[in-house]
Image (cartoon, rainbow, N blue to C red; front, side, top):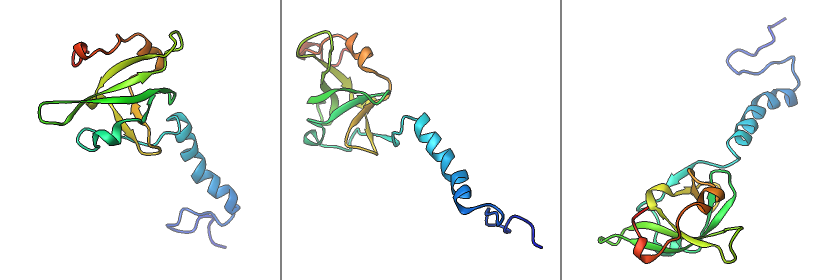
Length: 138
């Protein structure tokens, strides 16, 4: 009688297929839960047009919405330097606008949302309001 493992396949003849699949899929599902079920996020600098950025939802590291991109600030070469986000502020009617450096913003691979991995909505509430005069000083 052959041994329980089929040589080189990782399968076990004595274990039901459903149980073998669970041994493979369960760790991946747990990893997705631990990582917030978010796919990888990629830097967007130089990858997206101004029109491609405007109107996108921005989410924080906890996956909760922070706001929407309302404007994109360009450098002297015409490259995106900062995104201006109309942030949700639960304490103020109408929220507030906050600017983030383009290097801090990522594109989520699992959605069309932009991701601020270092921020939550609460963090944004503590940031100063964006004004044209304050651009680039954060």
